[in-house]
Image (cartoon, rainbow, N blue to C red; front, top):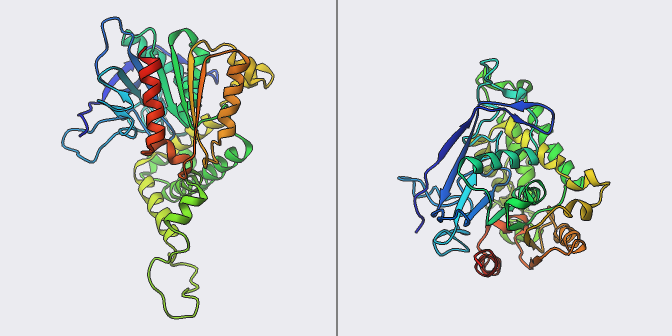
Length: 378
């Protein structure tokens, strides 16, 4: 049984300087907390979210029984990250479309909706904004920062930007930067959005339209990369949506109809995504993914970049995750070991692809549980 969650909001008047050289002021961050902050404020755990998630990490909303947080299987009373012991904080990233200030909100200087004029955001900017919110909550040091995928990049960046403000980092299904293939997938998805006739250069709000066609395609492309080939074949294979007996092959040879189950599934995911996600937010977040590369400032040396880290680490990867492969996690492990940092690494042999970090694999959940019980809570 999930507990009740309550969204909270905090507005910051002072400008936040961004990596791009721009700044943003009068912005709001949406967040949720679970559990109780102890007397010496030492049991706080920050959860960083991935591309299409939010601050709603765990629990359900009152009167909405199917509103579980995106990591509700991981976080809660008695779960791997036990909210009976830890004070867990989820923060919606700046530029998102789930409560924090983003492209669909009003620019304080112009009185118009930001749209395409929302400033470029990086992982480092998100970390700085999160640090400001923690300052407001009176939390100077975190027991741990944890995240999966893009959230794992934020956790890694925390160890470099604020090395003294955390004791542990839990980085799941992530990477120290995107490879060319990942950047290519992101670019194709972005092109689908910006070439949608309803995009209007990012100012579609003024036209009372949404570039749903582009969003649908972007989501379909992304969803393919989140699943492994094994899962796709097991779940869908070459199964037809309905029996067709008009020919020896069973095909209708139609260029329009949805015949295969995988086609139906991808269209369903695309349709659903286009109803709730903001197109400009998608562009912002995928660009932040592309830009993240802490080794860049150190001549490409990840080991040199990670020399700044002071905390202890747990890294988890999944064998069939080809978007953020185990090799990429092992690069981080090597960089940490080069600096003689304390690091634990688990590579889970799971069939689910990148989505495995969100699923109920007992081995994975137990690895995280053991780390929090033996290391973080120690």
